Length: 284
Image: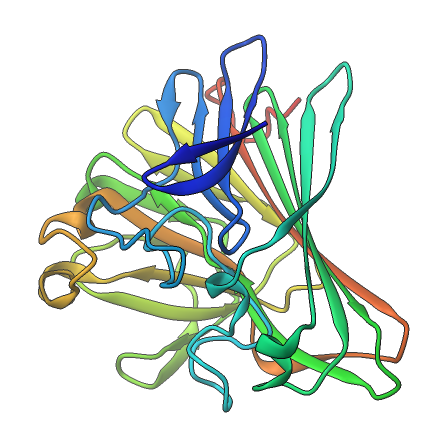
């Protein structure tokens, strides 16, 4: 059922346990994920919701370009266009929604590539799985970068700890420094770093709230970003204190493009799981 949220057409998925998901057709954008009675995603109250601009917060789908690494608009065009509903499904464990975007005059004006992108959002108790699938419908190879640019809600960024990236190659885009990731990442100012992804789950600790973050090996990078106070104050679609309540942990392909042969398919996913047991390995 299509509803309206802040003027945008949206789908809402709910579970008997009370977990709920809201997805906008604009950009196939996940706006809200409530699990265990708590909002798990950050959506800026100042975000422009006009059906044209990119939405600040939630989970933007960045495709077919990451940031400004190419000739397309920042983070590609997928987050700025309307997607269509393809399927919905229900099982004993949960519900899912798949949205679709295909090449059109609007995309071919900037990217002469025939393609079909599908974004499947699966909701289970305490768990959200998001999968981007790209089908090359062309006779030429498809090359893409991109990300699931997930904004996680936190109570206080100064108290947040992110674990699991230790030893991975790290590039700090603010200083252009290369290093290996520390066992714990903490945040006391602007933070923008690209990591070689790991197969280990990441653990986000936000006071008593704990979240496992996983991604498929088809995403080569993980990006961790917080704008800090100064940049947050300069962003028109972000409140001055918005940085205190969010942390982006992204499944990404930053520099090396994914290459998809004609008529072939690529897919990559990110999975978020709310932990109840104090032991990090306790996943159901």
